[in-house]
Image (cartoon, rainbow, N blue to C red; front, side, top):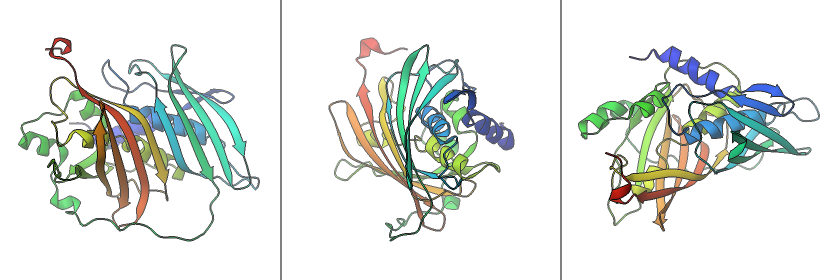
Length: 292
């Protein structure tokens, strides 16, 4: 069994990119076997690179309030990723950075992130939906086992730093597909507000696009190809990642081998802390292309 504190420490190391030159950073390879890099890892490392050195004229840090990313190529889990940051704008209230993630000299992701100095203003938010509390929901592995499914090893290692408790799904073809899960870090993280937002960027790729296939098949169906195409996150406040967060997801549309999904992330008190949107590839490979 994985030690939770060690898993969280490993996640922190993965997400704290190394500066190797001016506006050039290296993201460590994940401790997974050979395969495709998890999209949330690339988004989170790119955001971590973009956030380096973001301060206003008075020297105060600014918070990331949004990111928009396009996945271009599959990343290789056995190799580090290089992130080049372009300083597009530094204004009185906002700053903008573009980041290109590269492996082997080729871009695998483009990301734009915007940062805002802290200020007060008008406020409202959609209320958290009424769902079972995390204590009333099964642990992820137990839920899958009860459904006769097994979590792939790479996904098990990816989720090791977190406690994840999924709730009931809405899978009828007569209603909008919906699902939700509770998640929190399995041990204290430490670090600043910027790191907490990076962690949520990482976790925001959990299960989101799978919402688009709920009425049609299961995520573990042989031959199902699901991959993120683009991903956006809006941070409304710094999320308390060491306490339970509710991730509510729905998919209003799927078609043409693509699926669109939306997510809202609430803290335990019901405060909306982030909003997410993603479009992904969703298709069944022809039987001749499937591996046994």
